Amino acid sequence: MMHMSEKKKQLFGTNGVRGIVGELITPELVMKIGMAVGSMRPGTIAVGMDTRTSGPALINAMKAGLMATGCDVIECGILPTPALQYIVMDRYDAGVVITASHNPGAYNGVKVIEKDGTEMDDEASIEIEERVFSYNFDLKEWKDVGVLIPEADLVTRYIKGVIKKVPENIGQGMKVVIDPGCGAAFRTTAEILKGIGCDVFTINAYADGNFPARDPEPSVEGLAPLAELVVSTGAAFGVAHDGDADRAVFIDDKGRFVEENKEFALIAEYVCSQKKGILVTPVSTSRLIETVVSAHGCTVDYTAVGSIYVARRMRELIAAGNSVVFGGEGNGGLIYPDHQFCRDGGMTAAMMVLLLASKKPSLSSLVDALPPSVMLKHKFKTGNAEKILVVVKKTFNADSLNTIDGIRIDRKNAWALIRPSGTEPLVRLYVESSDETIAKGFEQEILSCISDLI
Ligand code: MG
Image (cartoon, rainbow, N blue to C red; front, top):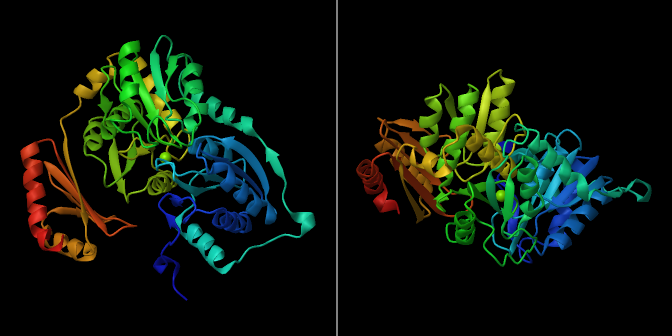
């Protein structure tokens, strides 16, 4: 038999199972995943979904699978992924969200949440797959099947939980605009920001799985109407979410899109000015974060790419007695360890209010005051990922290398990451420096050593 570590996930990626509805994602597959989860995590399981058109069909299959294996199902309806994680945390035996996060409407997927509110790890995900492929389920007889308990209002527990994390009425007099993009945050972020005293305007704040206004992935183009509204209302900022609202991205008071690493740096700086310790982030994150937090005496611990690795590393460091103050990714997915160990877009919106209320200057002036950064990004279609890594490692062996996920080369004035995709025949290259000439020179050094392989 193969060792667990040698086994590869086939259905699950870094963020659960995800795919096109009617192709990979069918009610049959979702029900089998439900029967597998129910067999592995017997007890009471909370389920929820984002606003996708396929959500109701798939969540009913999930509930059927869970109840058939004896689980009682708490049905939470439409809600953000972090809201379900908050609800599950230490109250239920597990949770399941039917969501495809930032993917277009044709997609959907399944994300499994553990008792502690974190996403299921690789080993347990592989066990689900093995059970699905071998039809190995602990199906119950008629007396022992589970029951369905509708609890659509549990989402308010999450809203109150976020409100509690910032000082009362901290947003008093602050005007903000929210764009949930017709995704799950239509139920939560406006309530959160009103709850902390803000004057709230909204756009695209209704459920529509056709995503008529913009893609679930927040982009500069998609957020143009939000930016206009921020300027015309004179708001302090605009906040937008992806489909399941574990991420938040911002528009500043001048109507400019705030690049997500800059958002991360600003909130990290605030957090580290309040509390000393470690910040955890993947090797793909901008060095801006390290620059601003080290100025406050905090350190950065780098992980593999994927929020679950960040969340687990944060817990590991805390369990070993370290102070861990913050975590997150450079895509607007930020993790507040005093709140819960997952990315939380609603919490990030509340943190932006807290940051601006205590710092006083405008968001645009805070963004402009950040150190300069030039990040160059490339994507190469190639089957030579392994060879590329070997060549890069050899060529740059005099540099400081981190090989936790691909190869990160750290120099004093620049860094680069060469990283094969886990799911496609692709290699990504990131190069960053505060100086464009240095970034381009470093990029050229790397490209010339791998040019035969791409
Ligand atoms: Mg998401």
